[in-house]
Length: 92
Image (cartoon, rainbow, N blue to C red):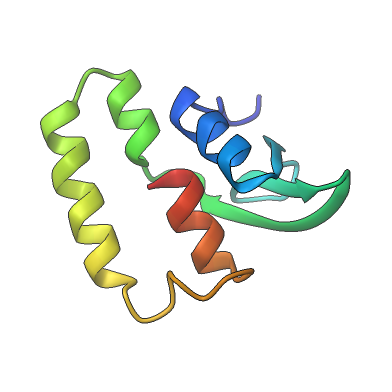
């Protein structure tokens, strides 16, 4: 069974011009593709993300975790094309 990609992640992928699929890589949530070409895998299985928490109805916790994630990864999350960039934009 793969990771269930949230509506939040699907919408974010559309905005970024990429597509996402549940990853077959051990320990990863999603694979990211651009024009059908594999780019990278992001997200660690076993940890919730913003979209997952929203889907569970945990909106307040989702906002708290989102803020903490963005602060913790501030140094790298805005460098386009990196795993941190895609994890931030797609999962948080």
